[in-house]
Amino acid sequence: MKDKTEAKIQQECFVFYKNTYCLNHHKPKHIIFAVPNDSSSKEETMRKLATGMLGGVADMIIVQPNKVIFIEVKTPTGTQQPNQKQFEADVKALGFEYHLVRSFEQFKHIFANG
Image 1: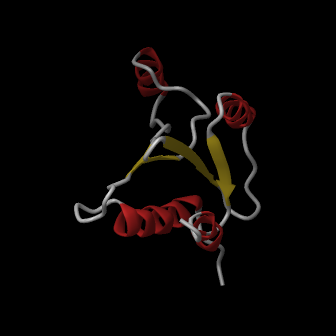
Image 2: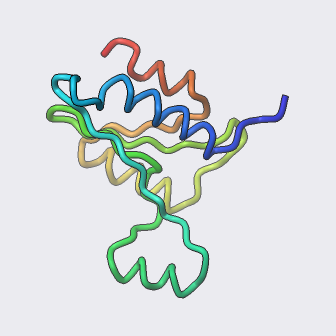
């Protein structure tokens, strides 16, 4: 079986979390969103950087009551870039939760008791 791409893993995680915690009938309703940090050209990258894009930001951000969680998605063999490691260190130093997930199952486990 071919390994899943980062995009496929992220899609599974996003759909699961949104349907489990982010619908109008969930009380309190959580928020999950992706941070698309990719660009198709150098010009687009420069424009995005000038308007606030930050390299290394986690792929998804989850907002819960009084809590923010950062999720970076990688394949089982994927590695974090230096700016992603720095972002992880920075948000952890600020007291936030950060997870590097390599599978949908690992993502679900983070929220298994909540």
